[in-house]
Image 1 (cartoon, rainbow, N blue to C red):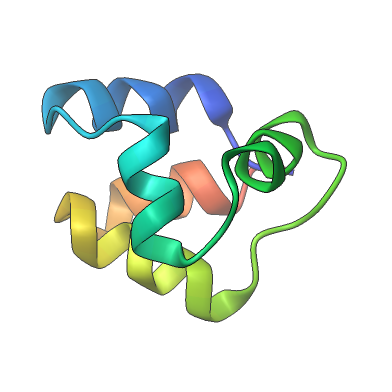
Image 2 (image 1 turned 135 degrees about the horizontal axis):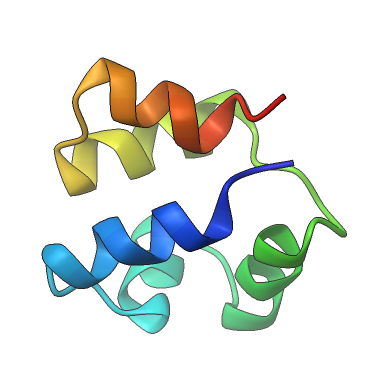
Length: 68
C-alpha cells in the first residue's frame, strides 16, 4: 500500500492533477483511483514514472511507495 496522503501532497506541490498523472501513466482515472485506494498496486515501472514526473527525492519516494 502507498502513502496516498503524501503522494497527493507532492502532486499538489507540482500542480499535477489525478487526470494528468493518469494520462502520463497511460491509465484511466478510475484505475489510478483504485491504486490510490489500495485495491490495485502500482507496478515498479509506474512508481518510477511517478517519481520522475514529480521529481521526488529518494527519501520521499521511499516514504510514499514503501509504507510499512
